[in-house]
Structure formats: structure tokens, C-alpha cells
Length: 470
Image (cartoon, rainbow, N blue to C red; front, side, top):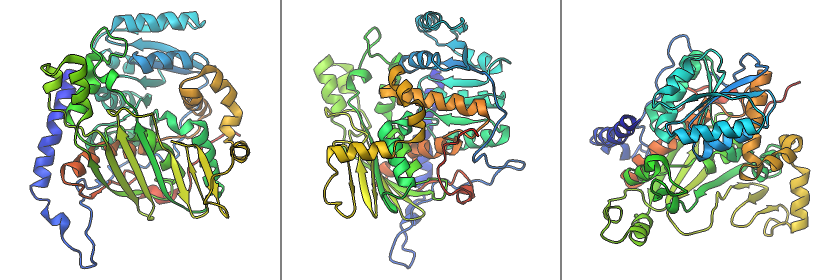
């Protein structure tokens, strides 16, 4: 596992050095008084024999047999939530920390579920992917293993759901797309925020034309994680091997854009009638990690003297082919309230979740709806999935219930042979912002083209759909 991390960290700077030694032509005027975004990564031809997996339907599964790999904070919660879903059976549990496996097994039995196979070795995920009695591999490891496990699982005939991000490099994004198309297996990223109640209501409103034509959207992941990043072994908030701090130490860009991007991408029908075209990204300098390290460990400590690369606030602007814009922000090192922003702005109205939840509509869009009007509007446009399972989701929990809805929909669609709510193109597109934003930041906000992971098929669909069995 450590080898994967080192290779990822080394490859990016070397690759960037090679690319940008010849980047001067990206700023040439095209004769139309504007400059073209740099196509750093060209879209490769689809390999022979492959077709797209848009709205992929796989064989229905009466019982979905699940292996959960990685049993830290997210993995433990996944065990608990999935135990509430009928026709979901956890058959394997894996983590390099033995105590985590034992804890998950204990919780599984206490919830009346049968014991699962237990795995502790570093590469035991390969054994799990090779098992005949596994339908779905559910990945909750550190980031560096998400793509390798997903690829190996699909290669061995398994569907895959991985915690975010799905990939750390553009090459990994393409590997996931090609493997999903080759094997016809589902591969999704577990982006829970698309299932939050307000986000689903505003998606429903957008699809019914309440906001008119959507023009601009914003999302964010603003969450003070310094206590987590610097939690050492034995402390309650510790990340295994402090892996998340290492990412923040080595990279500067939008390292975790998916929570803000996912819900607005679905509202804007990304790769379902529109496509992200290019981005520009800038980061502030770094202050928060050094400041916190000095306060916790002392000014002469190793942590305080490190050269942390990631700027505190990253802002990334995305332009779509059809002229829409998206602003995504990422900040995990500033002492400020949590926010994902979630804002949609159209020709007829506006909705926003943070810092104030509100909706404003024509003909009085200068003013927010009153609280009573807002409640009525959200009830009127409650998403059918929330109507179906929202109360159960609140009971089970998981970020207010959205985590449970995410798992419920995953199992529901697999059982009925339906297209999943998210697909491998979502996983690749949203994850690609990580690598592309780093390139833009390193080159003073240079516009960078976003690859078309559907290879031109994004126009074949017209709207985001969450499918329902007949």
C-alpha cells in the first residue's frame, strides 16, 4: 500500500514537468480575441469491442452479497447501514487493523446478521475479489487503494462502489472507464451528498423547470479537519498511517471536490446532455496546517517545520460545453463553519443551502421565500425517493439519512437490474478535477481542458434519471 502512495506522489510532478516544458502554445491567440484552454490530456479512442455503459443494466440480483474492504470510520458505518437493508448480505470484512475487523464482525452479529469472512492481510482484497460468492465490492480504504481495488474487482466480474475519490490521476480515471466498458460491470463512487434531502428537492425543482434554465451552480467542501489530519496513532480521530495529511502535504488543488460537485453536476445533467469543458483553479497560500501544527506540537516540531503544499482555500471554476458555470471550493484547514454551499441559479429562480437555506423565485426573486413558504415548497417538490424511504433514512441515520438512501438505492438498483443513480463517468469526471486542478494551480490558473470520458456519447442522454422498477 505504501508503494502505491509513493508512486502516485512521484509521478505527478514528473508528468507535469514534461507536459509544461512545451505549454507555451496554450496561450496563443486564436485570432478571435480569446485564448484556448490547454488540452493536457487528449481523449483516447475507445478500444475495439467496447461500447459505452450509459444507463447500464446488469442481471438482477435477488440478494446482493457484499464485501466491505476498509473498516475505519466510513467502513464501520457502512456495515451498520447495510445491515438494515433487506436482500443485502455482508459476506466479507477486511482491514489491516485487526481490531477494526473484529469490531465490525461484532456489530454485524449484534444486528442479527450472520458472521462474515474476516481478512487482515495487506493484499487480502485480491482474495476477496476472486471469491465466487461476492457480487459487490464496497471500498472504504484510504484513497490510494480505491482505483486499484475497483479495477481488480471489475476484472473478476464484481460490481464496485468506492468511497470518494474514485481515482487520483487522469490515467486511473481512464482505466476505470475502460474496465467498466470492457467488463460491463457497475462502478460508482459513493457520493452521498446527491441524496441529501434539500439537494434532492432542488434537483426535482430544476428538472420541473422551477428555476428556468440553470445558468450557474456552486458547491464546496469546507470542513475544518485539522484535528483529524494531525491525530496521531491512538488518538480518537486518527487516519491510519496519517494518510490524509500526506495528501495535503504533497499536493495543491481541489483534493476533495466531489461533495460539492456531485449534486450540482446531476442538476446540470453533466454527461447527460451537457459536458464539463474546461476548468481554471487557484489556491491561496498555506497557513492553517503550519499554524495548527505549531499550536499542537510546538514551533520546533517536525510537523511545524514541514513544507505543506496545499493552499488553505482552493477555488475551481468549470465551464460546460453549453455555457454553464460551476464554482467549487475546497478548504479543510480553516477555522470556519462546515459548508457544502450547494447553490443553483437559473433564469427564473435561485436556491442555496449554506450559509442560509433559502429559495428565491420570480417575480419576487430579490427576496427569499418566507420560512413557511420554503417549507411548503420543499414539501411540494420532495423527491419521490425521499418520499419512499426518507423516514427510514432519518431513523437509520448517516449524515442525517443521506448515507442510508445512498446504500438503499445501490442495493435497490442492483436487485432490479436497473441503471445505478451514478455511473463510472460520474466517478471519472468528478475525480478528474483533483488532478486537473493541481495542474491549473501550478500554472497560475491556466485553463485546462477536461477529458470527455464518454467519448462523445454525452449527447445521447438528455437528463439525469434515478430509475424505478415497474
